[in-house]
Amino acid sequence: MSEAMGAAVVGAGYWGPNLVRNIQNSPRMRLRWVCDLDVERARRVVGPYSTVRTTSSLDDLLEDPDVVAVAVATPAATHADVAMRALDAGKHILVEKPLASSSAEAVKLVDAAEERGLVLMCDHTYCYTPAVMKIRELAHAGELGDIHYVDSVRINLGLVQRDVDVLWDLAPHDLSILDFILPSGVVPEAVSAQGADPIGAGRACVAYLTLSLTGGAIAHVHVNWLSPTKIRTTIVGGSRRTLVWDDLNPTQRLAIHDRGVDLSSADSLGDQARREMMISYRSGDMVAPALVEREALASVMSEWADAISEGRPARTDGRAGLRVLDVLEAASRSLEYHGATVPLRVDR
Image 1 (tube, helix red, strand yellow):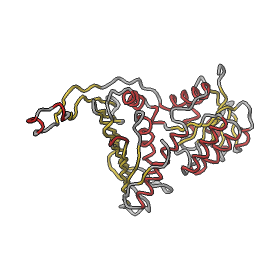
Image 2 (cartoon, one colour):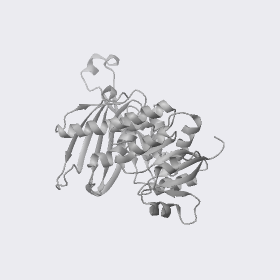
Image 3 (cartoon, one colour):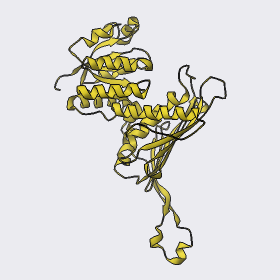
């Protein structure tokens, strides 16, 4: 598209203003509408001198032929309904996480978008940070070797949510990142989850997920609302190198270590050596790649615009959102069964 595409934002609450700002800053898009049930809140978001129209009616923007793309930032329980109405109106969609309240709803959205030839994109914002984009690049290029394990920690003294447990609140970030960075042929196959509610909140406030990956690899996610310290770290261990991402360290977010464990093939060893340890330890250099800092949401907008103009799925498309929901639902079932391993159902 040579002209900026018309866009609208539905929902002017917590995340909506960020979408409004980034759409307005995008040379590829022109914001035409902001919709919220509280129209005064929508007006405050766009400002008193803006030419962007505001409304409390979704129909107003869906009936505007100049609106090509609609970003949905309403409460999660309404995502499926709002997104489906927009798809029925022929609009390309960007939906906040989670894509829907259930995988069944998400399947309907994915099918509807594909039948209509429309872009359905999930705003998995972390996936578009410079650090995660670099991790994906290295993993997909084989720079880390075969993936052996992924260990992610996302803990802080956070707000205990009223409607969801800590899994559904925090783990979608880590699960979307995992889905984004794993190389082709490596996928989660099953999940087990353990959780606790030590403060009597009525839902899990601390949880641990363990995912079985293709080829015997493993991924572990720790989420916690009750930690007095804030930690955001992910370790990706490979057969060649191990990568450490510390999102709270602005001077060295990524560190790639050429250190690890090597296992010699028994065929390459003599009789005496076979009787000894076949494990050796490798100690090499650490490299901290330079990252060009850019707001992740600006990259989300660029990817959304590219996917629409090129007629292709977005990197974090509806199916990516569906895969995350599948893991969350399986993890919830595992919690009910006291940590039992639950196979994943979505074709990955």
